[in-house]
Every structure is written in C-alpha cells, then in structure tokens.
Amino acid sequence: MAWERSSSRQLCRLLLLGILFLPREMTSSVLTVNGKTENYILNTQLGVQESLECTVQNHTRDEELLWYREEGTVDLKSGNKINTSSVCVSSISVDDNGVNFTCKLQSNQMVSVSVVLNVIFPPLLSGNDFQTVEEDSDVKLVCNVKSNPQAQMMWYRDNSVLTLEKNYQIQQTSEYLQLSITKVQKSDSGTYSCVANSSIKLETMDFHLVVEDKTKPLPIEAIIAACVVVFLTLCFGLLARRERLMQLCIKEKDPHAETAL
Image (cartoon, rainbow, N blue to C red; front, side, top):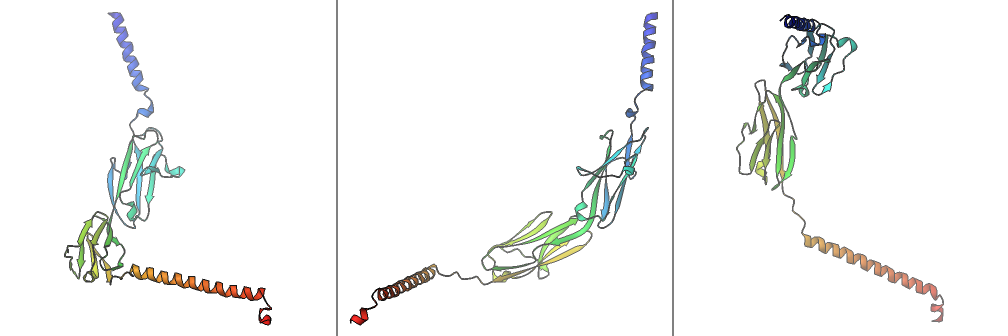
C-alpha cells in the first residue's frame, strides 16, 4: 500500500510540473480586426478609404501578423507586423466589391479573421449605343450593368415599356440585359432605352437602331458575262499586238523587198 501511495504522489507531481512548464506556444492568442473577433462584412462606398487594423489579444510574447488579399499576401513594412498591423484600401472602386482581406498569425495560421468588402454603388451602364443594320438581318442590343445592390432591368421604347413582338427576345443575367431582334424591318428603327432601377438610383442608357434598305446583290450571270467580255477583249488585244509585231519583224528581215518590186 505504501508503494502505491508513493507512485501516485510521483505521478501527480509529474502532471503538475508538466502543466506549469507548458510551452508558451500553447497559450490561446485571439485576433481582432477593427475590434471584431469573427469574420464579418464591411459595407463601404465608391471613392472612400477603409482602414483594417488587426490586433493580437491574450498573447504572452510578440506575434508576427500576415495579411492576405484573396489568395495573395500583402506587403507590410517591418514596423507594421508585430502584435498590431494595419492595411489601408484607398479609393474604393467597383473592382473591390466582394474582395476578401484576411489577417493571420504567422506562428499559427489557423488563427485568422476575414473581412469582405461590400461596395455599395448605383447602376453603371455601358454598351454599343448606335447600330446600323440592313433589313431582314439580325441584331442584338446589349446593355451591360454593374450595380450593388442588384438593379431591376427593363427595356423601354418611346417612354413606354417595350412591347415584345414575335421577332423580339429578351435575355437577362446579373451582368447584362439583351434585346435580340430577328429579321429587322424599317419599323424597328428607333431609340431603345435600357432602364436600371436600384434602391440607390435609377439610371437610363439609350440605344439607337437604324434599319437601312436591303442591298440588292448583283446577279451572278451578269458578273460572269462581264468577266468573259473582259477576258475575250484582252485575248483579242494580245492577238492583234502579236500580229503587228510579226509584221514588223518580217519588214526588218527583208529591207529590199519594196525595191525589188
């Protein structure tokens, strides 16, 4: 019994020593970005500057920090890496919408906090706003759109919602609104308005369509006949030139022919 008690005491002492001398790396450090400990979405606007500050909490030694923009690392100055690190996103643009920034511990990259930029902006419209086509041809009017929040899109003509004819077809995605017209006629000429309506602003872009008379193709028979005439004319011209040259050559070979006569 005494031996068992002694063994139990030794085991308890070993466990106590192990706890007291745990390596400092086991201490659970916590990261915050702008005071938040969990991933979050940052609402922002075009043209502004956003600052993201990452700080280590509960650390017992200096910790180096890493910043990532999507999958690529962000270059940090030497004085902007230890315990606290900041990145600035200046002049926010449309391309920054949805971009993910992540701060990580260099010693344990499983410890991280991510921020996704949610850039709020009104509809931005673009496209080929003037087209000239011939009758009976097909045409597409494509209105490209970027908007956050997403805008409701519609086609208008003469200040009224476009009436879909049999030869009209509309296709819409989050990036464009397309009007396809097959076998266009003169009556399809006019101005078509692409209207994008979001909770921020309503934007309009006009598309001008001009339908011209169909060009009549030249008859193939007439083209072939003209080519034959040109070919024969060239042939006769070459033959006539050859005969003239032959006569000159004969005169040069017999200079006394006229004297003899």
